[in-house]
Image 1 (tube, rainbow, N blue to C red):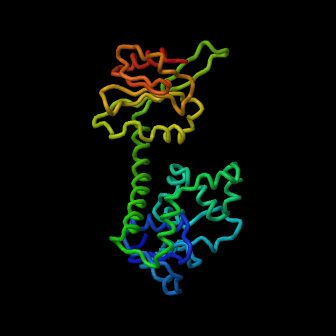
Image 2: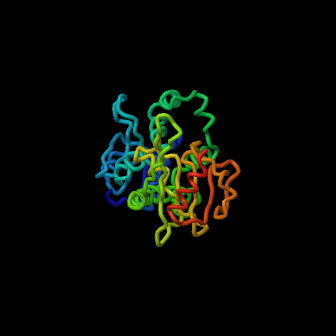
Image 3: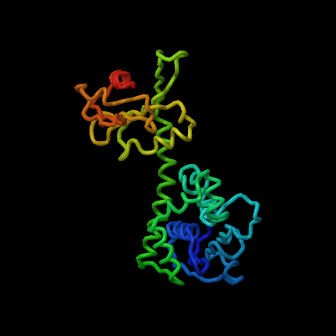
Length: 292
């Protein structure tokens, strides 16, 4: 992405896609935001990032508009075009479950989005956030937003959080892929016997700040949702491990091991437990005892 000194987007009502596109651009390169119609000179000037307006998509000139695309094109919004220019779009589609619905909403409207998500139309309104509404109204109310202003600073933080999340999660998934193991559990009581798996992430030095971070996304990305029923990962508050159901799978009830001497905590709903045990043999034994 070429350097730019100004971000220009359309006046009038603001939407989530142009707001978030500007947030990401601020995180990439802090600049004032101007809200007005662009001139042909603006569209031709790479030092001005033209967002969600201008009828041009040309990353080489920092132009990120989608409105000129044909009606039957796949839904894509200004935020998506900015993420593409930063080589983060594919990870964003994988890691940000809200992105594709946001594209549909911006390009097709609430009815088509509800149909795409296979939910009632009323669900779209039920998911409305007053935080979204306030921020968008504040953004739309000004024709220029400068560094140091509360809204500009909030937008910059939103952009940094999103970029940090995308970049750190990819790194985290690579870490999990390097260290994780899949333990196979053979359930002989079934006829025929069924095979399920538990993802085990060993302790490493140094230990990540949030040892279990990214595990659910890793399981989904690897297509293991249908076979993984539990997770064993380092306990960030102790020297042992946490045992948990994967997506609340009923295979385990960890209240069954609450009385074990090396179990320091077992939630009364049975979905998670903590243990001081560190050997794989003992962890496997606890899993066996907790089988529902």
